[in-house]
Image (cartoon, rainbow, N blue to C red):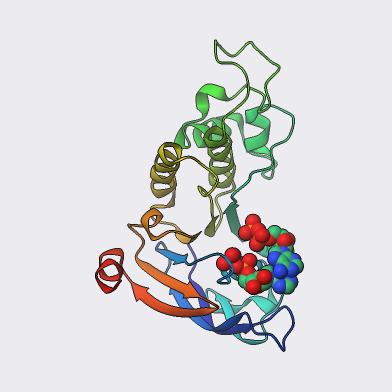
Length: 229
Ligand code: ADP
Ligand code: ADP
């Protein structure tokens, strides 16, 4: 795993209108840091900066000590595995959807990733259904199952950094818990940045930052933040 570091990052889509105001954190190799905060706080902006959709106006973003301004977008995409809120799946089998993005993966590797994400039973299913040969349920994948496909795809890619960007926000409470448990399993030992809007979804992060209007207003472990609030 790699170390990810935001150093005093300043950013505005319009530089005269700052959105992130001195945001700093370090995700040590193999650890998990979470950023929580209300809608509009700047969480998605952080993930866009990480992929260099935009460059910072001040401060730096570093991966293993290297300023990402010296890294191409293509290479960033290769080293960051994102599990987004809404996963776009192709109209093809779950197997293909997992394998996509890692040409050269062997079927055994794809199956292993599917097992880790607990989606192996659906490996020949089509996400949107209309193939009824996969058992009695054989129709559409649920939202949670689609997220499992996204998780398997990301594991297969074996990226240096994992980014969970509101990965469970669109799910119902019960499914959200299941998918979170899976995210915790697959992120163990990997450098992981979690973006979420609720504190309750990031309980075992090594550090949690509370972002409000582009500033880190609190930081600590889950238990510390609960006491502080
Ligand atoms: P969050 O993910 O925490 O909901 P965002 O990072 O999406 O917050 O947005 C932070 C602020 O930046 C908001 O005020 C939002 O309106 C603004 N913003 C987000 N994306 C853009 C954009 N592409 N252009 C201009 N302003 C944007
Ligand atoms: P997500 O959190 O899934 O990224 P957002 O609502 O933050 O969703 O952004 C969805 C898209 O809309 C992004 O491509 C973003 O750049 C754009 N966007 C978000 N807020 C604004 C804004 N205030 N002005 C312009 N574009 C925006």
